[in-house]
Length: 445
Image: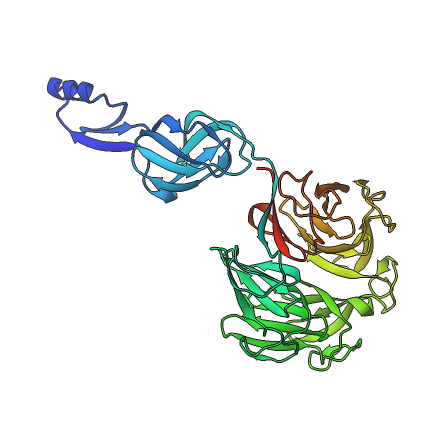
């Protein structure tokens, strides 16, 4: 609101007439001083309807211009404000806000405006990049090419990193959709540490970004775990001798057997699914390796971690309760913070059945991630589908018909060509890596 103070003699007829002309809406009296205020009001909004992410112009009078003292809400969901003047606010409709009143709140005081009609945007599957011919070309996504893709990670700026295991490289797609090579040498297989230009890899698979912004990945054929320091532009091996085995201890003497999956907890501990050893290994920030789950013998036995048996674990992720969720063949399983293993979905029989978790069937689970609602999103490789397990224990198909293909569109008609990696990004947008493409599922909003 706008305010000003006048000092005048009481019963002044001229002053009263002046105030009547101004049309002041309110005043307070303190001795001979009167403070008059113009109340904030919303006159209209434009447009009056639209989907989430629409910029709406709110026109009115006496808006507070200090962004820290004013908020805008659509149906009680707070919006991002792009700009403010005393007569105009530009704000972005929050995704999922639904139809409701536009409201401006200034230092706790609410000003109600007209209703904004929210238009729902249906879920869509699209293609970010597809390499119709296997290759190793950097540049704009329309011109770039890949070989075989496995896993995806996203940094704080929105750039995504991909393990291109067919080319033994780590690739990057920046926010302008330009593809570049982070590290790895064309046509060269190896396990050389050093600068980004010198380093070599052999079948790099899962990858995460640690709290310091480093890329950490498992190098499947080299039986080790590597760290890519993007600031200092170096690559180093943090665990694994390169020999095939199941040896715990400090990283320089530890041995792995075809490491394929990777996760990180809130304390910075790394967890490696050691595929051929049928174990999940733990690497502390001090690079000490231990066996977290599994006996070394493949099986599907639930119970305490030191007696539980796991089979073919690939994708892993921690939920908000500290449980390590992992795909194991045709089951979704978890390890609690108390290190107790249980099966939370899947009968263990190959199939394609949605429904209650104890009757649901899968066919070769690979990667997984967890969205903001707590849904576990999984790549069902054998069924060529993306499935989800809700917090209520219901399995459903999120996208895919079961046929191999490259069809974009609504999730019920979309097709995938050997989906492998999966990442849930900002706004619960899902990135999926296939043999030759990166696909995107944008959820309904």
